[in-house]
Length: 127
Image (tube, rainbow, N blue to C red):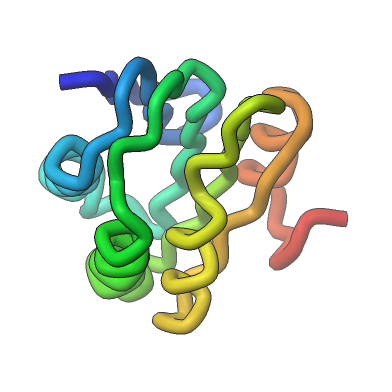
């Protein structure tokens, strides 16, 4: 596994840290664990930090398939997803676009503070 999921009880946010190599199976397992642990929360607030991903091993087809999977799995839970991407490697572009087609919007942020501020606000889109 190259991910870790923790719950920030102060902010009521599920924090996902991805590191190392990004694979399709690994990302699917991360979402499954997220749903199993925190899928009951409404809305499900997710802070996904992918800045430590060093290698993207998902094909474009796998990324698109994963984006569809995430949308199907999380849109009904009213999920709000904030992403922190690394400067060197954007591991979410194709995934983000496919998820948007399924009705789930990911928002990218430059800092953790901005992401948490949006996640805990009532704003629909980052301001």
